[in-house]
Length: 201
Ligand SMILES: [Zn+2]
Image (cartoon, rainbow, N blue to C red; front, side):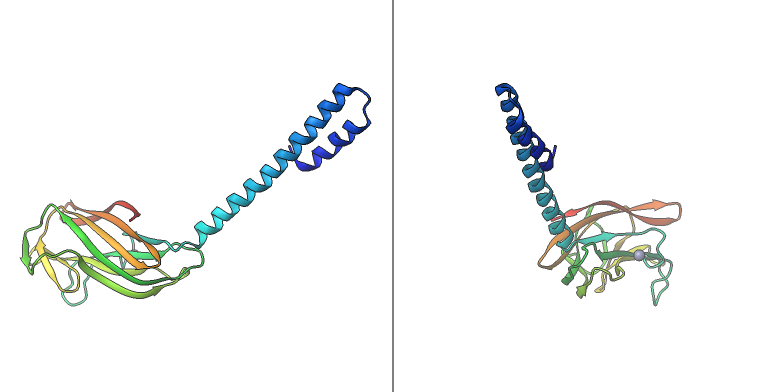
């Protein structure tokens, strides 16, 4: 159904003799015209939604198992296995400003071996993240092999190594906060970090 179709129907309505055919073609012309304008309106609405979605800055938080930086074997200094998160900008054309990355919660409650556990545990701050920029990396924790402890953040604080669920959040200016949940699981003699959830605040 389209606008141009309403033209021949309107013309037929004028030229046919039968009164009923006039009404029929007249109605068909009206229906085609209504559908055509609805279709134009709907296309414009969908396009506007697409543009709005594309322009909204979106923070993505992931851990990529086979990324050398996400899962590196050596934390600078002591050579501990390092677990990092990637933070990227999923928007097509908007920069994200003043990004703060922090741990909101760790469960179950870890047994601390150094420092005091206070949320949020600040992980990193960045001034800006542009759409085409490669992902930023920040340390979530490193595994101190000698003490079998997980060392969080730059402060640092540490707890006994074990299976934990870690909730992180990224806040930024003029951008909805982004949360993500990661699970630390034992895998033979190693620990692995798995992504469990992500979403808007
Ligand atoms: Zn990575």
